[in-house]
Image (tube, rainbow, N blue to C red; front, side, top):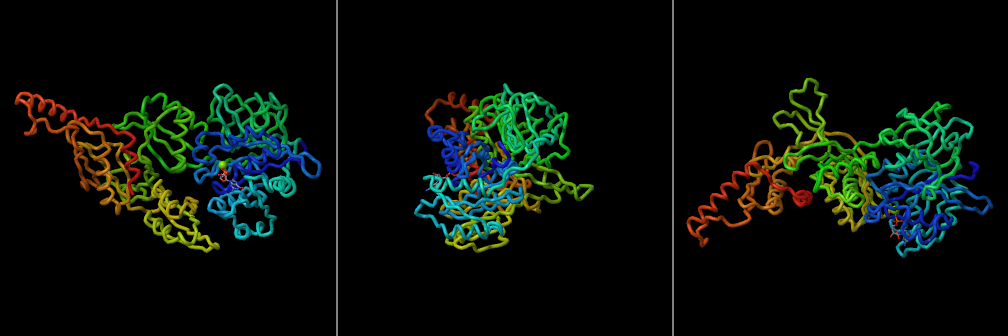
Length: 599
Ligand code: GDP
Ligand code: MG
């Protein structure tokens, strides 16, 4: 296909604004896939995505479209994930595109992720085609939505804005025409040395690493000798082809094309998304500026519910498939051998947990998540030096600490006017500091500074419930700032349980420790003897309860037993108490879930 007849584009949108529905419509109109195949929402084919309704892994499909001018165009749709935790994946997809459809739901208007994704597309230098969706809905506010879009940037103030219903298909043919006429064709030289960008990769145990790539210059054939420029790894092409959206082998790929490549490389670490593929004999002079996977921000212990080996294998496979998920081995006295997992955010953690169960049948126990703290020690030779702590167990004793800093985010919340008071009340409850407030029609935009550690499930569900589901949130890392945080240890039977160590904000300590021990009282599995549970901060016991014993005291007076029986029971109970000193308490997932519920 000639370059002038190719368009490589993405759809960017806030979650639920209809991206998957529009992608399906485009494939239906161009007959890329049959109606029956479509019923399964092809582009979101991971089970997790169906449960959450969000796209986790990007999917890509080539559509052939005969335009009104009589020519057949190749429209390569590069699907992007739709969640706040997955900006990295969006960036990769955008880097492989020349244009983007900015899809906005007419019943909701411009939302936080609309803006966040638009900014990424602007940075990637894409031409933006704005499209208003859901015009069939009785709640559609088309004029107001159009006004919001026009205010987003100077180009959009001028751009044609299409109005469609991705659900009924109304206006979708016009979208295809606009893609052809409004979005740019790729540029590139087929004769130049090969220069291709890896924007996605999967690992296949038999075929090795399979990459999705966009060719900017040159061409590719079976058996070509190629090189990955960052890792310096060389390989030859086992198979190449296009995505329809299934992998369909072809004989060549040329500048401007989007397709896949089977590398045969068995070590996934060698193949990085964002790396440049070139030819061994005629390498390109200029690789793409490499972009690194973002660093994990949220950490948690991952421990086997059944066996360690199966968990380890499943986790390793997931880290290959998702470069932003990281693991390192750790061992807990209470839970045995396991891993510390690093995640992009709290939903990323949730999704990894579900993928473990759905794709590998592996149940995992997760401890309470925490962020990375920078601990400046009192004795430090260089005051700028600090200890990086992402496991609470490694948090030094308070006597050694000078001060601690924690990650602070800039959070943008967009919410309807009538919910602003409640949203503000709760965001401030979660230590948000209001920086700016802007009026956008019926929507109010609130800008906060907020500690990353506060953005847990409770915050998200509060935000949703107080705004009746309308508030939307996007976040950006700001800086590390001094934080008044302390280590909270839990002692059961007077000995510390390492898996129950947390870092908390000092002002929360009195209330939180009280609630914590109460929760533990009802979730720690009972034993034959009472177990004292203490919450300790900086050497002081701030709260205490006793987990009641499973049965009554054998020696209690009202038990109708012979003296010798009672004595025998007492001996056994004493034995149990001695065992308790070993502290072999059980910590089922319910214990950690109960702690997550604390506010
Ligand atoms: P995504 O999260 O952006 O991929 O959104 P989806 O495509 O999954 O759509 C979210 C919800 O909006 C689904 O329930 C769709 O059926 C619905 N939806 C999508 N497009 C339209 C539309 O044009 N009109 C109406 N009424 N509903 C739509
Ligand atoms: Mg979707």
